Image (cartoon, rainbow, N blue to C red; front, side, top):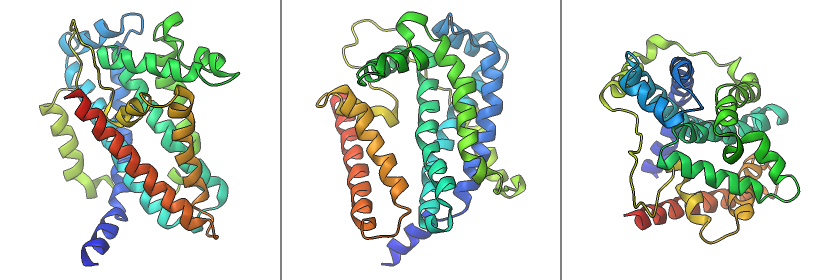
Length: 283
């Protein structure tokens, strides 16, 4: 009981929200610097050139990569605190805040795709196949969002640096405008992120021949494994959407609340298991 209470207190810690906002700022600033030197017409070459030729380019690409990872992890933990106070949120702001989760995930995902290494290229192709599998509107959505096969990474780049960022800020604005963070209280955390990015370079896969199995980004592993068993529409659209819908309905404290909560835990546990299976298959 004591350990469980400590875990709950840790998850409800307001610092997760502060750290989420700090890393969001770091990701945006470093992303602007990296984006200036990135060329979607030569994605893999320009990514490598940022590391090798641009002054401090390796550092800013690492800072953008790791601050984005820390942002997403902090956001997930911060969501738990939001869920515990769900009844205090009006319906629309709460639903909008939940919808920032898939948008943040897509932002993280398109960042991997833009590297255009083996991981990024494969992830982009999988995303295309998933979108094209959506009945009726699939090809149109793919043409609007990705269309890598026909237009390279131009549209992915546009959405990563503009469209999805704007959508995220619009959805999160009602929450962000009431949220204030004092940077002086988190200098140790800020310094840790900056120093970690200095020590550890952002990953980029070398060009290899004879690679038969490529793992996607860490947050994509479960979906990648699920695609081995289910059609793309069910694995890539219905399965993730079911979690978002369940989280939105978690706000309603009625008889369906407990079954939905159980569904969320089963979903998360199942996805964790699928991710482990994908890692085992790779090794």
